[in-house]
Length: 228
Image (cartoon, rainbow, N blue to C red; front, side, top):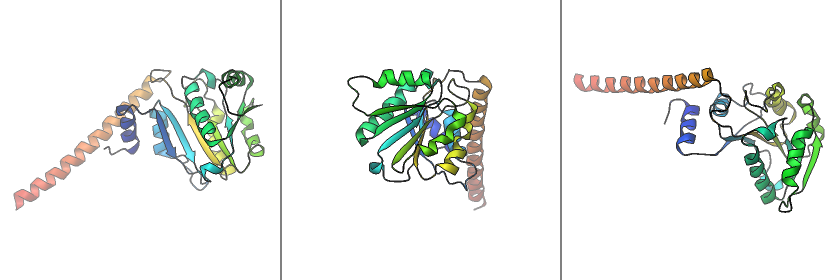
């Protein structure tokens, strides 16, 4: 479909109006480029909800979700969408949800889950500084699904400590099943024009490569025919 794998996936996402992208990951500490250039490209160049999942144990053995939520996550366009997704998973799997967030985000979570039609056990604990992310090593149990809500660069819930998450996961949390969520964004929302132009130029260059290779291949075929 495309010489560039990530561009091919992104084109398909747009053409098929795909809303959820699930990508398998490997937090092997020997891999220095986690989560990998293709995955990073898809996250940075798409605006839909992206789930990066590493399965360490069978899903039906998981008992709890531990969900870390960054400050201002409630202000992101995709906030309610990913919440609905993990709530559905928790209810289907009979799992409780344990949120770790700052006070403002936690209040919004409580407003959503303290409703009579919610039948999921939900707990809350303060996580005021993401520099203290490693305290989660003392909270996790073997049958937990560790969920980290992240953010793309340039958006309201993004902060510098989020860049350390891949390193932390590969070094300190590799024994747990984990799910990293990049919430849905609006395509026109706070996107740098230079970044958009760079993407278009990259995509155009990739297409030119495809055309050039195809032309070279056809040229060789015609030369062989002429020689025969």
